[in-house]
Amino acid sequence: MGRLDGKAAIVTGGGQGIGRGVARALAREGAAVTIAEINAETGRAVARELEDELGATALFVPTDVLRQADVQGMVDATLDALGRVDILVNNAYVAAPFNRLEHKSGDELLLAYRGGPLHTLWAMQAVFPHMVAQGGGRIINFVSLNGINAHMYSADYNAAKEAIRALTRTAAREWARHNVLVNAIAPAAATPAYVAFAEAAPENAAEMLQQNPMGRMGDPERDIGGVALFLASDDSRYVTGNTLFADGGGHINGVQWVPPLP
Image: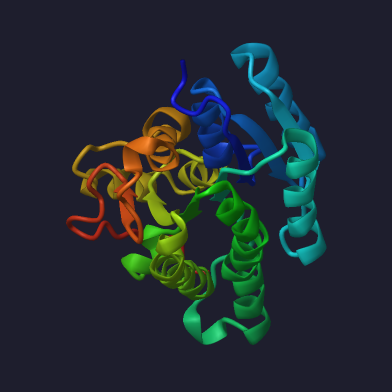
């Protein structure tokens, strides 16, 4: 028996990195998983992977989180195919490249908000009535140490991720009476974006790892997925409104990194 047998989950941005790792962790414990992903190739591949390798029920739904209709569509497709939605993982994000604060444009800030807190809100609102009707549910939002530690050159991304934390805490307060529990994860993981950064600036990446108490980046499935699994399961039935730092202790001393100057 898996801890999530009979449960249905949606993972946005599930086609790679942390999203894929979380989807695998949930599927291993019996959840049927919708992979909501803009990249059809990777989205289908992960859905097949869950089915063929883990024996899970999986569904790929093409989803551009910048479009509210797509966000509603991923929920509708999940309900049509799986009959319920118990777990929502808001992992996808869209943001502009690094740039110094004085050069950040209003359009870049708006993109980061549309690519982060706005689609997170849409998804939360879309699943809410169904979770209430089922007697509860779990919402897991991904935030970032970039915002918490005020990392340089990503002010728009930082602000958007901190806005998601505010949404998380507010929803936890308002929806607790419905047994809809809402928490956030601030990860440090070896995502494709991190790998690309480490390859482009190896000395900078090495310096950042030296500041991490555990001295390494997390594995998306084994290190981050397990935290999401805890929040998705009955093990967290009395936990809401929290930010869990799955970062090897990086938040303790405020790990800082300075990307190459844009």
